[in-house]
Image 1 (cartoon, rainbow, N blue to C red):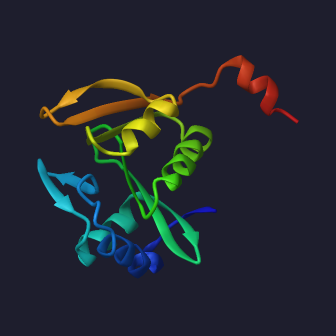
Image 2: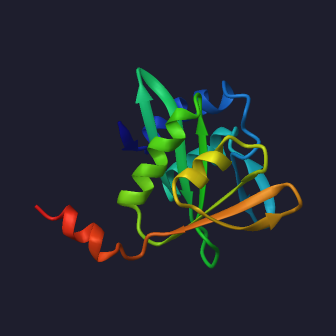
Amino acid sequence: MIQRLKQKHLFDCYDLIKNNKDTEDFYITWNENRIGLNNLQILKKVLKQQEVYGIYDSNLVAIMIIYKEKGYRPYIKLLANNSKYYNHFMIFLWWNIFGELYLKIKKNSPLVKVANQNRWLFKGLRNNNEILFCINNIKRSNYDERYIKD
């Protein structure tokens, strides 16, 4: 089950990040510098100031950050022990988060396939090795609204 993470989940998040070898795309950009989230102080700030969600399966197995900085686009950052959890987050985003969201990942990331399967739109290449995707959930179609009502 996906749940909102707070500061009390700090060490669970830290353990997941420290024990995961695929953290290349799991960073935030602050003053045009990439900052890895394997620092406890930075992670604590992120948990306090951003929307952070996690999936627990006896322990924390996946984390998603919706990183919003004033004046910039909101970015999604994902990290999981297994790529099957990425799909869970994509479905969660589709039904629960409204507005424009961006996902910037490496070309060879398993998230490329997941983003394509879940209606994320390709926006372009960045830095010759990163791909930018976008999804806009501002308004659902009338078709969706008819089938959501009780």
